[in-house]
Image 1 (tube, rainbow, N blue to C red):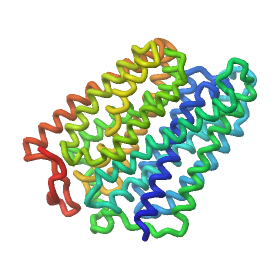
Image 2 (image 1 turned 90 degrees about the horizontal axis):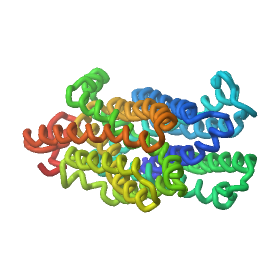
Image 3 (image 1 turned 45 degrees about the horizontal axis):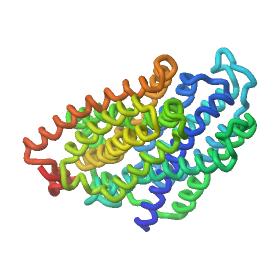
Image 4 (image 1 turned 180 degrees about the vertical axis):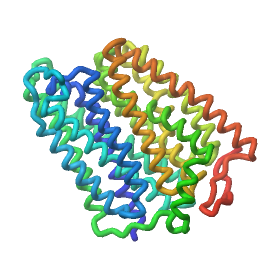
Length: 426
């Protein structure tokens, strides 16, 4: 077994997943125009990607011990190839179709988005327990380093999309509809490079048994962990943090373009850059402060950033608000997964799958809702309404912090159930 190669493959798989996210966000307007869809219908098209993501994480994460991590990760790579081909070659209507869901192109597009989501979920369902197994004594730190490649992929995808836009002149007033169509298809096809890359990295590699299986924890013991009150409370918080982090990201490009006239994808690249640096080089910050204190501060910054984005009128204001939003949301996802693997190690891949699946299910709900707000109240209102979620999280995470502090401080649990060591300050 080659842990370094497996970790690298996991990082590249996550890059593929996030490239889908950023490039899909960049092509939304062109995709909507080609398939004669309004913003709410575009939101509905995006939803199956997150429904599929959720279903795939839950199933893949739950069955990873039976089918093996290598098989499921390879299946995700082939899924990306099939999904992108379906979206690129979906027939486009020449006029709006009523009802829109009866159009063959819409159905093919819907199926492609669903398959993308299934592939993304398989990646998330495998790499989280794989990371926890490869680095059992440094889980939260390594989760942050691994998930640094989520914003890393957003940057790669965002810059790729921006470069193609400029080279092909897609943002020029005279750009033809045919050229715009070719442009979004090329952008989407670049994702295949990363997908094929991690397929090659895992070819012939031996994968370890998960930490839970290696420790001899039974399936019934793993299942019981999911009903512990602390996990259930954390699970509720995951709904809000994931919707806060990923919902606005899918709309931020369109929002900034509408409010300021600049290329909104640049804001997504900028916030992704902040996240990458903070996760990759500052992933160990949770070892110096309580993870829940970190999440409390993150929630404050995120709420302020989202509210600020709803008020921007210039590129400078957009970058200032995006800085608060980008820094605030940085530690949400990996820290929630790190806490899950540290506090509930006996829950194994199942609990990590439940957390990841819940996160994407939350986004599947919030995307069409944001699209409806966008259509009826404008883009600014959509961001302002979502800011309520991190505001609620401020109080929830502060409560967790006080609870652990009353018990002597936050400590990671060993697979045997005893406290291993303090990993954060009190």
